[in-house]
Image (cartoon, rainbow, N blue to C red):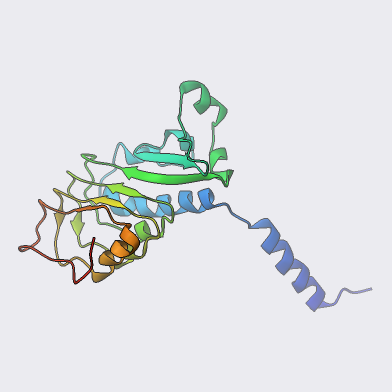
Length: 192
Protein backbone atom coordinates (compact mmCIF):
# COMPACT_ATOMS: atom_id res chain seq x y z
CA UNK A 1 0.00 0.00 0.00
CA UNK A 2 1.48 3.33 -1.08
CA UNK A 3 1.47 6.28 1.29
CA UNK A 4 -0.16 9.38 -0.20
CA UNK A 5 2.38 12.16 -0.92
CA UNK A 6 0.38 14.73 1.05
CA UNK A 7 0.63 12.53 4.15
CA UNK A 8 4.41 12.28 3.80
CA UNK A 9 4.66 16.02 3.30
CA UNK A 10 2.53 16.70 6.39
CA UNK A 11 4.57 14.27 8.50
CA UNK A 12 7.84 15.86 7.33
CA UNK A 13 6.52 19.34 8.10
CA UNK A 14 5.55 18.48 11.68
CA UNK A 15 8.77 16.56 12.25
CA UNK A 16 10.74 19.61 11.14
CA UNK A 17 8.81 21.91 13.44
CA UNK A 18 9.32 19.70 16.49
CA UNK A 19 13.02 19.09 15.90
CA UNK A 20 14.09 22.66 15.12
CA UNK A 21 12.93 24.22 18.37
CA UNK A 22 15.59 26.59 19.65
CA UNK A 23 16.07 28.38 22.93
CA UNK A 24 16.73 32.10 23.29
CA UNK A 25 20.36 31.32 24.15
CA UNK A 26 20.74 29.25 20.96
CA UNK A 27 19.52 32.26 19.00
CA UNK A 28 22.01 34.54 20.76
CA UNK A 29 24.90 32.19 19.95
CA UNK A 30 23.84 32.23 16.29
CA UNK A 31 23.62 36.05 16.32
CA UNK A 32 27.04 36.36 17.97
CA UNK A 33 28.62 34.19 15.28
CA UNK A 34 27.07 36.54 12.69
CA UNK A 35 28.21 39.66 14.57
CA UNK A 36 31.81 38.51 15.06
CA UNK A 37 33.11 38.98 11.47
CA UNK A 38 31.66 42.50 11.22
CA UNK A 39 33.16 43.66 14.50
CA UNK A 40 36.61 42.16 14.15
CA UNK A 41 37.32 43.61 10.73
CA UNK A 42 39.75 42.18 8.16
CA UNK A 43 42.18 40.59 10.63
CA UNK A 44 41.70 37.84 13.18
CA UNK A 45 40.98 39.24 16.64
CA UNK A 46 42.45 37.47 19.68
CA UNK A 47 39.51 38.26 21.98
CA UNK A 48 36.83 37.39 19.44
CA UNK A 49 38.59 34.11 18.63
CA UNK A 50 36.96 32.79 21.82
CA UNK A 51 33.56 33.23 20.12
CA UNK A 52 33.85 29.82 18.57
CA UNK A 53 31.57 26.80 18.77
CA UNK A 54 34.54 24.67 19.87
CA UNK A 55 34.99 26.90 22.95
CA UNK A 56 32.63 26.55 25.93
CA UNK A 57 30.09 29.38 26.00
CA UNK A 58 31.25 30.13 29.53
CA UNK A 59 34.65 31.15 28.09
CA UNK A 60 33.48 33.51 25.32
CA UNK A 61 35.25 36.76 26.21
CA UNK A 62 33.54 40.13 26.60
CA UNK A 63 30.10 38.70 27.40
CA UNK A 64 28.13 38.81 30.64
CA UNK A 65 25.41 36.18 30.94
CA UNK A 66 22.60 36.13 33.48
CA UNK A 67 19.84 33.68 34.33
CA UNK A 68 16.18 34.71 34.31
CA UNK A 69 16.20 34.93 38.13
CA UNK A 70 18.96 37.58 37.95
CA UNK A 71 21.83 35.31 38.99
CA UNK A 72 24.96 36.02 37.01
CA UNK A 73 26.67 33.12 35.26
CA UNK A 74 30.06 32.83 36.93
CA UNK A 75 32.61 30.75 35.12
CA UNK A 76 35.31 28.97 37.08
CA UNK A 77 37.85 26.40 35.90
CA UNK A 78 35.65 23.70 37.43
CA UNK A 79 32.41 24.95 35.84
CA UNK A 80 34.11 25.40 32.47
CA UNK A 81 35.04 21.71 32.44
CA UNK A 82 31.43 20.80 33.20
CA UNK A 83 30.28 22.97 30.30
CA UNK A 84 32.86 21.73 27.82
CA UNK A 85 30.68 22.60 24.85
CA UNK A 86 27.81 24.93 24.08
CA UNK A 87 25.46 23.05 26.41
CA UNK A 88 24.77 26.28 28.29
CA UNK A 89 23.14 27.67 25.16
CA UNK A 90 20.44 25.01 25.56
CA UNK A 91 19.37 26.56 28.86
CA UNK A 92 16.28 28.72 28.17
CA UNK A 93 16.85 30.65 31.41
CA UNK A 94 20.24 32.01 30.26
CA UNK A 95 20.36 35.46 28.63
CA UNK A 96 23.09 37.75 27.33
CA UNK A 97 23.03 40.83 29.56
CA UNK A 98 26.10 42.75 28.43
CA UNK A 99 28.60 42.85 25.59
CA UNK A 100 31.80 44.49 26.85
CA UNK A 101 34.69 44.86 24.42
CA UNK A 102 36.42 48.17 25.22
CA UNK A 103 39.99 48.46 23.92
CA UNK A 104 39.63 45.11 22.15
CA UNK A 105 41.37 46.15 18.92
CA UNK A 106 38.16 45.89 16.89
CA UNK A 107 38.35 47.43 13.43
CA UNK A 108 35.15 46.44 11.66
CA UNK A 109 31.65 47.90 11.52
CA UNK A 110 28.66 47.84 13.84
CA UNK A 111 26.46 45.04 12.48
CA UNK A 112 22.67 45.47 12.39
CA UNK A 113 22.28 42.19 14.31
CA UNK A 114 23.28 44.03 17.51
CA UNK A 115 19.69 45.27 17.62
CA UNK A 116 18.43 41.67 17.62
CA UNK A 117 20.03 40.77 20.97
CA UNK A 118 16.70 40.97 22.77
CA UNK A 119 17.90 40.91 26.40
CA UNK A 120 21.06 42.95 25.93
CA UNK A 121 21.11 45.87 28.38
CA UNK A 122 24.61 47.27 27.90
CA UNK A 123 26.89 47.55 24.90
CA UNK A 124 30.44 48.77 25.55
CA UNK A 125 32.64 49.05 22.46
CA UNK A 126 34.70 52.14 23.33
CA UNK A 127 38.37 52.73 22.44
CA UNK A 128 38.42 50.61 19.29
CA UNK A 129 38.69 51.46 15.60
CA UNK A 130 35.11 50.64 14.63
CA UNK A 131 34.13 52.45 11.42
CA UNK A 132 30.96 53.36 9.58
CA UNK A 133 27.69 54.41 11.11
CA UNK A 134 25.40 53.24 13.88
CA UNK A 135 22.91 50.77 12.40
CA UNK A 136 19.26 51.74 12.30
CA UNK A 137 18.30 48.39 13.87
CA UNK A 138 20.03 49.26 17.15
CA UNK A 139 17.18 51.62 17.98
CA UNK A 140 14.68 48.77 17.90
CA UNK A 141 16.31 46.88 20.75
CA UNK A 142 13.81 45.96 23.44
CA UNK A 143 16.11 46.29 26.44
CA UNK A 144 19.24 48.33 25.66
CA UNK A 145 19.95 50.86 28.43
CA UNK A 146 23.62 51.76 28.19
CA UNK A 147 25.61 52.30 24.98
CA UNK A 148 29.25 53.33 24.82
CA UNK A 149 30.74 53.74 21.34
CA UNK A 150 33.14 56.52 22.38
CA UNK A 151 36.59 56.87 20.79
CA UNK A 152 36.05 54.93 17.59
CA UNK A 153 35.94 56.03 13.95
CA UNK A 154 32.16 56.27 13.62
CA UNK A 155 30.74 58.89 11.25
CA UNK A 156 27.56 59.82 9.45
CA UNK A 157 24.52 60.61 11.53
CA UNK A 158 22.93 58.93 14.49
CA UNK A 159 19.77 57.22 13.24
CA UNK A 160 16.54 58.64 14.63
CA UNK A 161 15.58 55.11 15.69
CA UNK A 162 18.22 55.25 18.45
CA UNK A 163 16.12 57.85 20.22
CA UNK A 164 13.32 55.24 20.39
CA UNK A 165 15.34 53.80 23.26
CA UNK A 166 14.41 56.90 25.27
CA UNK A 167 10.79 55.76 25.43
CA UNK A 168 9.89 54.56 28.92
CA UNK A 169 13.25 55.88 30.11
CA UNK A 170 15.07 52.75 28.91
CA UNK A 171 18.16 54.54 27.62
CA UNK A 172 20.26 55.71 30.55
CA UNK A 173 23.52 56.51 28.79
CA UNK A 174 24.54 57.03 25.15
CA UNK A 175 28.21 57.89 24.67
CA UNK A 176 29.60 58.58 21.19
CA UNK A 177 32.19 61.31 21.88
CA UNK A 178 35.63 60.98 20.33
CA UNK A 179 34.34 59.81 16.95
CA UNK A 180 34.28 61.51 13.55
CA UNK A 181 30.89 63.18 13.92
CA UNK A 182 30.93 66.72 12.49
CA UNK A 183 29.71 68.67 15.51
CA UNK A 184 26.96 68.23 18.02
CA UNK A 185 23.74 66.37 17.47
CA UNK A 186 20.60 66.59 19.50
CA UNK A 187 17.95 64.04 20.10
CA UNK A 188 14.91 65.00 18.04
CA UNK A 189 12.43 65.95 20.73
CA UNK A 190 12.69 62.91 22.97
CA UNK A 191 13.52 63.05 26.64
CA UNK A 192 16.23 60.64 27.71
